[in-house]
Image 1 (cartoon, rainbow, N blue to C red):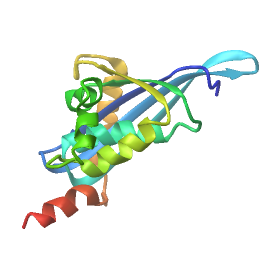
Image 2: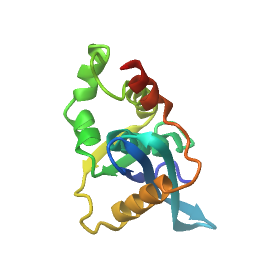
Image 3: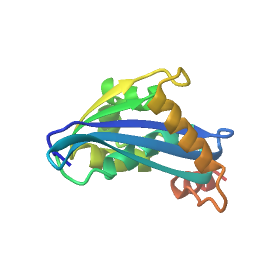
Length: 167
């Protein structure tokens, strides 16, 4: 891949019930050089869990996409229909949560994991309206839903461990 080409990362998360079975979907696009010709490379990723939340899956989709980038300091444009994720970055919520040690915040395990990979790249977040016909967002939604319909889904330990502590 041409390390100077921006990476376009489209993400979505879904849960059937909240909490319930959930999944994430990711579509990555980047121009690459093949035999001196520019080509569009597309990579899709997805995964599901037997009990989780929509917000966890929205955030995990971004994390998985960023972790899939093979080099440091990539220019990444993230497109998500999650106000939770986009506003956490664009409105500075994450920095505030970090200063307060994530006190009382849900999904702390994922936000810490996100922050580690986010810092390795130059990332810009864009919100787009979900279920509005945007091809990549619709594909991500399909991947997420298919993922949580899978068999033998693993446990989302970051979610279930916290829930177990409440009882």
